[in-house]
Image (cartoon, rainbow, N blue to C red):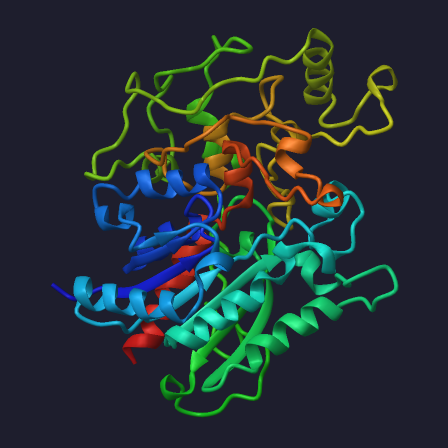
Amino acid sequence: MKEKKKFIDLFAGCGGLSLGLEEAGFQPVYVNELNRDALETYLLNRDEIYPYLRDNKFHSRDIKKCINEEFFKNLKFNLVAKFGSEKIDLVCGGPPCQGFSRLGIRRSYSVDKEQLPSNLLYQDMSFFIHKMQPKIFLFENVEGLLTAKWNQSGLKGEIFKDVLKTFENLKGYEVKYKLIYSKDYGVPQNRPRVFIIGFKSEIIKNKIEETDAVKAGFFPQETRDYPHLKNVLSDLIDNNFSYGQKTEFYPNNAKTEWQKKIRTKKNGSIFLKNDALSEHEYSNHSLKTRAKFNSLILNKGDISENFKTKKFAQRVLPKKWGSKGPNITITSMPDDFIHYEQARAPSVRECARIQTFPDWYEFSGKRTTGGIRRAGNPKKNNFEREVPKFTQIGNAVPVKLAFEIGKHFLKVLEI
């Protein structure tokens, strides 16, 4: 059997990027994630296949407390002892991005980005790459990184300039970048993301001047195979659902090939009607909210005068995309969207599907939370944040996108 390429996932969240890479043929050998619930989600879904990740030799939480000479000495020793080599094919990661996103700016209590420790974690990732010398590295972040500035008097785009230069300064790597849209890689949402990719000079035959990662061959070509939301969610519709309750068994058999694939278990069989279904709990909306959602569905997303509010931002999920394809991006806020047929917010399982997580994937922690518990309060030096299930999913890299990236990297590594 062919030996799998080894990778390390930093700031791994609940494991969307990892899962896609694993499905492509990579093997995780070390994982880092600060939040306990997100880390538990990552580990519990890999207990059967990669049980060694439970050992604290192969996972860590606070990267700032562990990356020093002693840490790397021990990590390399443990990798040799377990896998026969300290060599790593890929280091990937998406440092926390709340301070760079438009939502994050709103929830960061207006402190300057240079005051948020999480906004400097790209430097730790760069140091990690320098010490481990993988053949490829992959940095991922939100679109807002491209225009973000360190403080009010700063220049637009100065943060991305600093981030890119940090990775370009790594010796022995060719570095490219690209703003991509997840919909172009088979994901049923728009979800723009910035990627910085570095290839070891030794795996590139000729120096490439092109900075565009796709044109330079550092990132896969678009697949454009995204499904309509009706094909993603229709089999989960329970005509007898109740607000505040759960649908605990599949109400239907799979109706499309896409649904069959997302319902495929680890053993290759497919979840059938009346099999146990997880994470399909409904929000207990107020009567007024239910009426508003019903009105929006009937009026194809237009809100009537009697339901208008200053902060209204909800959108009805479309059954089918328009000519330009997916035009939404799933967030950590479940009430941002309304189901296209039922007057309710999407469930955890439905959001997970839009992020292309398979139905067997489990999530640890609270379903949702809010306020200080989710955002922290940087003004009071409180950087602790709860990361409930909706947030874990909203923060993840879509599994299908990661799968396409993984397939491409394997081709590069095998040339």
